[in-house]
Image 1: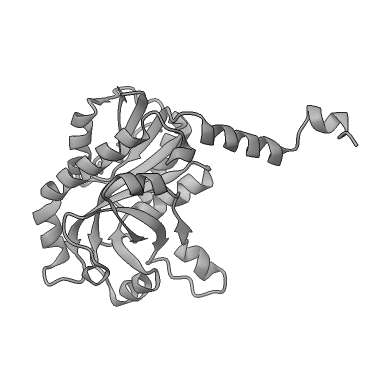
Image 2 (image 1 turned 90 degrees about the vertical axis):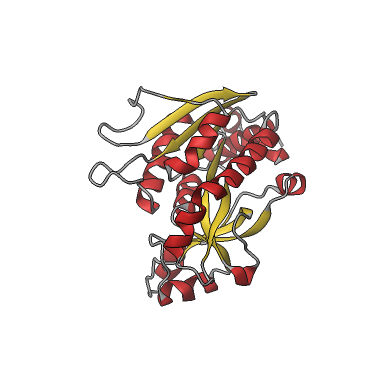
Length: 271
């Protein structure tokens, strides 16, 4: 029996969404959004991809310090954004609030096919991490959103599997591990308990926030993280982070370049 004419002419929203998703998965990736938290992390990639800072900030709300670099690399339109310097304190606007806001605004403005959250992270020696290792996160979660009420507790943790990229992992020499996100550089006993529960190899201050926004707006996202410090090591986290930041950023730059080179000319389903 043939479907009613009205259903053919006006397919239900679910069918339209499924068709759009299928088309997106099989067309070559053309626009990517790279989200980074710190200028030190972003600068090598800006140079590598020959990106230029966009003086036109009309795509962002008036007064925000967010910075966009743009350019063409191979067959990809690249938008690299970072939240800029805090206007009151003059430091990089790190953390989940800035990351989620700039990710939301950038997805709305640039309509990327793929989001890459690239940055540094702490790593756990007990999970096999060493300074300079670069990971592709397999799952993300928060460790400092404690809401001890049924269901709200799961919402607070916000655990998500990341977009699966078996071919990237097969091609590139990246490690795999879970990423846990919180708004503090140090680790309280409460945070440590939650991070262990998240089975995390990595600890950062942005990843799960970027994942939340990308998932909300139905854009695939991958997370490339380079280890600057060993959270369960002997050195103070802040000291080790600052000591290794520039050196580890070079490893991050190389890994992100390899990922972007792999993406060029491929579809989402090829990743």
